Length: 196
Image 1 (cartoon, rainbow, N blue to C red):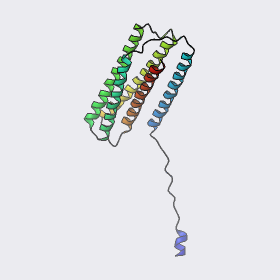
Image 2: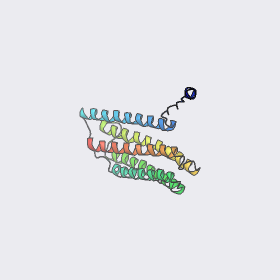
Image 3: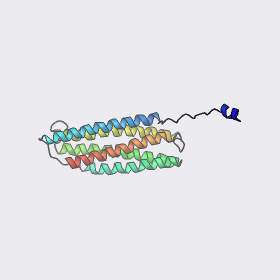
Image 4: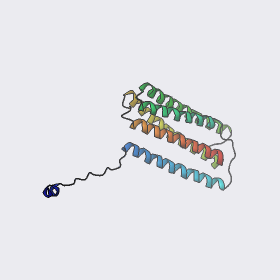
């Protein structure tokens, strides 16, 4: 019996390593870099505003409505994610398409906001107050266009039935990035309203 006990070797299982999908990891790095960019810009805004010579103008009213459109688009993006989890392919395609349409509507409304700024004689070149408004909204718009591209890839994948309950990476990436862009805009909008 003692020989049997001596011959038994204990095999240790290797510890599981924490892993993340490489695309999700890249997305989170990208999100962190965007956060740092806008944190630096809002800090620069506050510093420059404190120096004086700051133009007063009305924030375009269309920005309020575009904010509502973006919040609704977050709801439709969540609808897309839930549809993918339930393998409801019709709803998935519809939800992504509606989210895309709302994103395009948001961009159009942002452009209309720029038209309102020009009508108030607020230009990109001139007073820093106006320059910051164009930079904030323009950079966010650029990132939103990248979000629309991510949505197109998710929509194509859904038509190819590559997005479903057992393959959620594509829709999770699209959803995470879209919700982040919505939160970023709400932060910028509230920041501009409060510190304008």
